[in-house]
Image 1: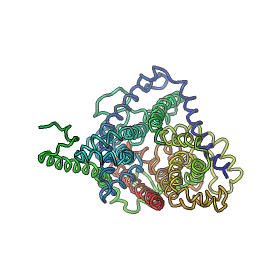
Image 2: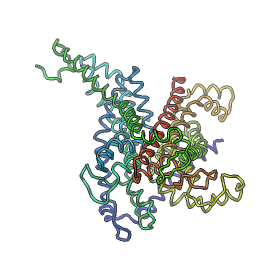
Image 3: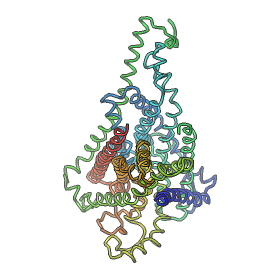
Image 4: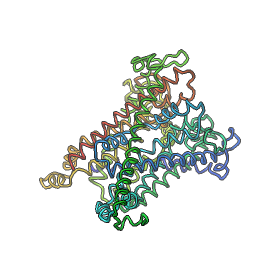
Length: 263
Length: 319
């Protein structure tokens, strides 16, 4: 029986190695400086993912600006005063929200923002990503804040500090590493999101910094390259994937390194 | 006035104390409002999507769920082929992923030496970090050819008399979709089953071993005790499989037909939204697609809620 379960475990890891190895093998050949800075061009003329990288960073930055602080605040609420009925409901809804397909957030933002404004925009894309981030950051923050020993809170309270200062100046700083790693995981997760961006940020062939215009992203660019009928674009899809997966694995490994002591 | 830093060192004059109480109250209100935001978002999602799909809901009613034609040109919209595709691909994925995931979790928690288990668990979790679109790319160029050339002809030769393995084997279709979903949900099911197994008290294992049970018999007892948690993990995997979009859109073939053969192309709810949303011309078309989104939302919300309750029940029992 141990042989069988070990086979499962090693089989799954083999798939991981196979997928990653194949990406590296296929991606490396088309990777070049031009590829990383140029905008997409018609078949046969080269072109790259420069605008998509910048677009992904802008979308991610905006989404983080909204999603991370909100997530941390809600998570803190759940950990510090969320044991009543209201907290239980919020926790349950946040948990189920994590499992809602990302494309549904795209549909929602489309109906609320894009349909009203009449055009695809960076802001709409960032909003859909932020909605995905909020429950993830909430749950990791709650877990981390709960890990802070009660004695630290009691100590500060006994010195006469009000509750809000205990939370803000003692508890949150103590849990900061954990909260930060949770936020990084959320960033890594939305960095790989494609579906909600398809009809919010839409995609663009140019460098763009305007928030009320469509915005390119790495994932949507990969998708467009991948489903095209051209060999050359397939090669570009692999190269872009190599860039994306490298970024995501890098974040995951840093998080692993930061949280190593806990286990 | 003392500056606010002195608060921590015991300045408890009357005015200060009043300030503190006021501060605490404001703090609590701000945090509670933020927490309420999550409920507001979810409520807004239900409201907005219902309102935006009202045209389609009014036009087709419950017939939307059992209608078999999806013809944007004639303005006829039925969701059954998509519901069928979603369910079949998800079940296929669960059939593959469940035994493997439980196997991996048992190996990592019960059998592997700690030194080996930790890095291996991390590697399995990394599978979940790979974006959906990347799995889709890999499926198009690696998995589909592999199935077309080796696996599907073999299945056709040996089990070809079954309706599941009829038709042309071209790699793109329900089977490939199910397999790629299985790979994607394995790390998720594994992670939850691991947590559940770890929550079973060590004393149970010791008691079984002390009574003379073998290692495997002990594991079986542990699994039996964790069964509702494992069920929760499977349901969670189901939720993920239902909502998975990019990878399956790229590999399932995107044809709204109901066919018993796993070699034939299918279509899922999430895929049709991803594919046709930006092309939807006409209000009714768009409205029908948003209704698809609403269905996806409600189904996954219920499925995830159920999974959460099942997993919680284990945590409570062992606490």
